[in-house]
Structure formats: structure tokens, C-alpha cells
Length: 183
Image 1: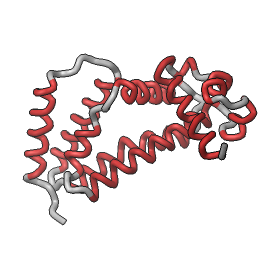
Image 2: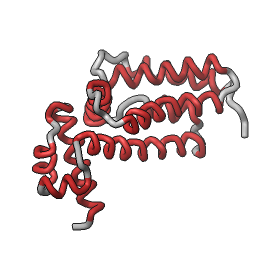
Image 3: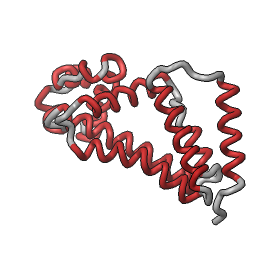
Image 4: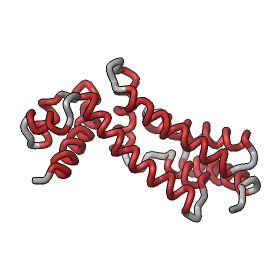
């Protein structure tokens, strides 16, 4: 088994535990057991719980960077990609992001690097929106609407009717198309 596969199995197991039990269920032993590696094998890749969470955040950061690239280079535009990706695609995704944010908020010993990465992921969408739109107020409204959709979804709050959400997104996209910078 190569080191990359082992590292991925460890992160997959961490993700599964975060989803099913939350951060309080994460122990080195539990993750090692779920990943079918020895505790020593886990420690080779991740010397602490915080290091594991940082590794998971780095993985999620890679996925976010793909979304940023799609927003910048794809035909949909930043606004559409941002609003589309503001809605978690599965209950597992919702639970994972909620657990990661809760872990970051509740752990004073969490590496600053992990916190900075999550802050960057949220703030970078704002930068992309402001770069794409000539109206800074509309860019900020869209940012806050998307963040609100995201946070209410991952917090498990009641969601509006899907047709209403689609109409809201369509209206924001329509307004943004009028002030979108052309390449």
C-alpha cells in the first residue's frame, strides 16, 4: 500500500467519523481503526488530531480551488457557480462542513494555518464576485445570500421551498448579468 493511499484512507475515515459522530468522536485510535492502519501508521502521516483536521481542510481546499477555477474559466460565470455551490449537494457534505466548522470554532489549539485556510476559502468567493461585477453592492448582496444559503443548509435550519430558492438565484443572476464585467 503506498503512502498516498494510506493518507487518503485516513482522511476518508476522519471524514466519516466527523459526519457520523462529530469532532468529539475523533480520536487517533478511532481514525486508525476505521482506516485499518496502526496508530503508528496514522502518526507517520498525521502527528495529532489537529494535523489530521488540517489535512482534511487542505483536501477540501483543493476541491474549492477547482470550483474557483470553474467560476473564473467556465462559461457559467462566478455568480452562477458561487450560488450553485452554496447549496450542499448531499446530507454527507452538509454534515462534513458543519463538523469542520464546529471543530475550528471549538478548538483553541487548532493550527492557525487551518483557520486561515477556511477564512481564505470564504473570502476568496467575495474577491471573485467583486472582480466579476461592476456593482460592489450587488456583489456583496450575492456573497451574503450565498453564505446564508450555505450556513443555513449546513446548520440544518428549515430551507425555503426549492422553487423559491431557484427563483431567488435566478433573480440574482439576472441582476448580475447586467453589471458583469466582460473579458
